[in-house]
Amino acid sequence: MRIALDAMGGDFAPDPNVEGAIAAVSENPNLHVMLVGDAELLESKLATAGYSGNAISVVASEGVAGMDEKPTEALLKKPRCSIAVCWKLMAGQEVDAVVSAGSTGAVVAAGLRTRLFLKGVKRPGIAVALPTLRGQSVLLDVGANPAAKAEHLAQYAVMGAIYAREVLGTRDPSVGLMNIGSEDGKGNELVRDTHALLTKLPVRSRYIGNVEGRGLYQGEADVLVCEGFVGNVVLKVSEGMAEMMLRRLAHEVAEQLQDEKHLATKAFHSIARRYSYHESGGAPLLGVDGICMICHGSSNGRSIHNALKRAVEFQDRRINPQIVAELSEVPAAV
Image (cartoon, rainbow, N blue to C red; front, side):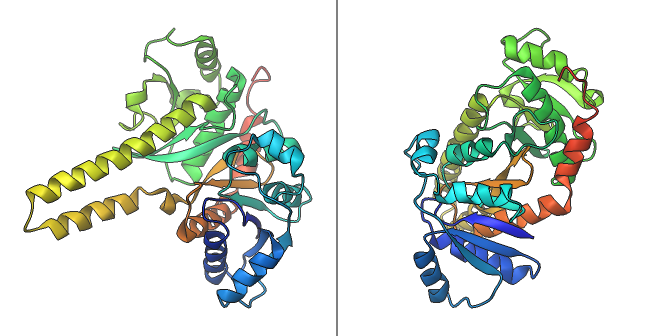
């Protein structure tokens, strides 16, 4: 499998990307990673790391789409920036996947410019797996499409159910629609229209209706769909809340257990690692003709390694062919 890795993307680039690439190809002999970025710098980093194999190559690009730049403007000013070159490689079928810890907006915008969509997909969406009291749930979209239509959300339900089934191992996943109330008729026009469409989809036997925000972490649904603005807010609030609660709880427990403070600290570190985004690696942009994994901006080498592994798993599980097949059964109105 060939993967284009945006080596200049991320808060600490390129070091974590080089580290993650070396770890991934060392583990998987069938993987080839193309590091896209400043060629001279990347060659130097590989040499410093002591890598001399042929499973990693360097592809030159010019510039980076910065986190503080408007994505579309950055791509216009820097048509050969690292993320743009990654997508061009996939559009030209030179690679099977794109992985980036750079600006999410730029990653999505560059992908949308290629119009590299799967057959039947009207708008891709970013899916994240979040921990719940019952295991894990998929939430999408979390930022790719903040101006979604009901038909987009209905397709997210189909794609999210496939992802939950094939990657998370959820048998017969249930699908819920994030809303301000569980009763029928709740929500704005977008949500009400989406509810009407979801009752007609192939997932209808497992569509459980509206789910309030507090139901996400209760595990009320295996897949929760929403438009990108809401999803991104939910994701960022969740990250902040989890970090705050873990720190406060760790402090309080350690204060109460002076003699066993080291055990309490060890336990909280274990929990933090288990639910860290470093372990999941990245979130897939579902619906593109290829594979795109979007990583956290502060990803370390372990994050990138796991994102590359997740991209391989995505291909092995044949997620995209299943999306095309199931969307072909969706009513034409959707």
